Image (cartoon, rainbow, N blue to C red; front, top):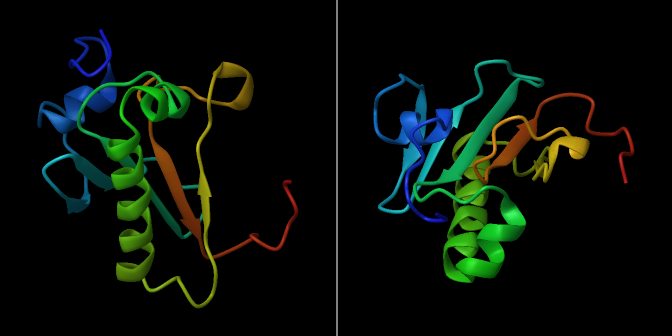
Length: 119
């Protein structure tokens, strides 16, 4: 069920402290941690602590929490000092878009190759 931790979800296990991570920020409702396979010099994931399978499901079920995830992504960018140089926020939604962990999350990416147009 959406919102409840899922036993087979790696991000739920990270939130629960069952799998170690390099935490960047944490609030009552969100956790930000470094990606274990970074694609850029700055690559941080921001996840809601509650389980939602993707960003769209999160936005529909809990718009306030979706907003909190985005706000935390902005705070991560500030703390990582990438606001002035530019950064990208990416939600992959569905396997066809490259989502491999089906727990809503946003990638905060900065530090190289952002000049390339993706959209």
